Amino acid sequence: MTKRSLLSVPALGLLLMSGVLFMGPVMLYGGEQAVAKGPRAVIKTKFGDMELIFFPDKAPKHVENFLTLAKSGFYNGTIFHRVIPGFMIQGGDPNTKDPKKPETYGMGGPDHRIKAEFNDIPHRRGIVSMARTNDPNSAGSQFFIVVKDSNFLDGQYTVFGEVVKGMEVADKIVNLPRNSRDLPVERAEMTILVVE
Image (cartoon, rainbow, N blue to C red; front, side, top):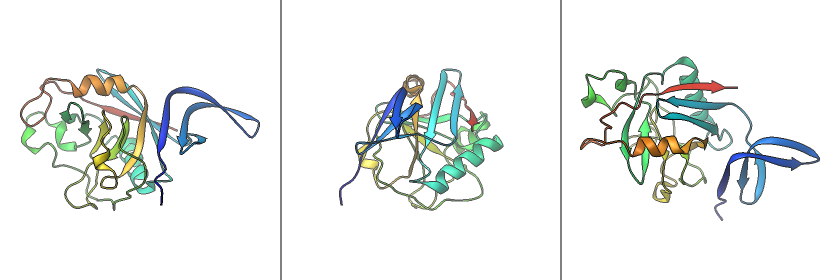
């Protein structure tokens, strides 16, 4: 079985399908073009905004979970608590809302867990994937954005979205000065808005 790679054109593009002109981010699945449909999210930070699209056909429960948490305000006030240059930025832990308890960062989440939905989308730059413990079925709310292709994660973490605008913001965050636990010394706080 051959893996089909997913390529993204991050800028707005025009696509002609069946005589109908579509405008929006264009996704290429192994040479097949499709327009990203469904809700999007915008992660707002003091460093700028990142716009995300989702892959409900590849990870329906992860997409549903992220959108439900985002709509409820769960992520608002959390930070990107782990940044590793040349790799990724991680956020989504509710414990990070309390600046006085950094020792708990990376351990928090909602009161539920999601079963793994590993898929064939590679962990390339811009991919949004769910963080988890050693248990593949332990994802909750924490997610990471890949800043450099990281194919060693393929098939081990659930890819559920992609940044289609604002990767320069992730680049700013990943390069913030950090401590020995990869925690930025400056809070990279987020608010997530869902756009239907």
